[in-house]
Image (cartoon, rainbow, N blue to C red):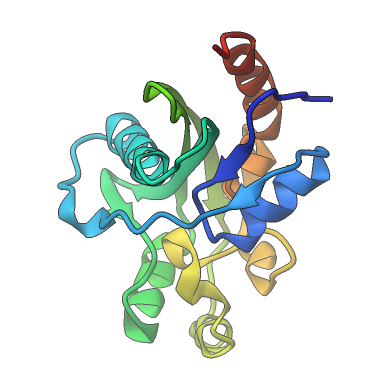
Length: 197
């Protein structure tokens, strides 16, 4: 089990990330970051997602009075070098799902740790390959009407969600698609906390 001498803060309002951290027994507080993701221009998936994860964590760390470790994360879906963040609306979600239908895409989740006392940070990124089966337009519309894909990168969820039946095959870490690559996260956070001041 992870033990921290400093409070842990999750800079995300994602219910999926909250559930994953609870799953591994972490005690933490949630302070959602208000960093404007749309202000950053896409470069390449690894650097882009790492920058966003770090920026979110730093934005929260700057507001803290007491020394803490802030956890930031960002998940992006990339199809043929086109990044798919959360859809703007239902029409956008339909567009994304039609593009993903019958194809393989990559999911990148970046995680950043920031120590608020001196803003020391470390980040890493994990990639998982996902292949969709060919989707019927009716099931895309039904899924989008449920509202579920509207808060998810790439307009789908693989966990506790109808979107799971779209996924034909994955190569890599399942939890990475959910929002945190748990095994790597656990190891990296342990290493980071060993360097607490």
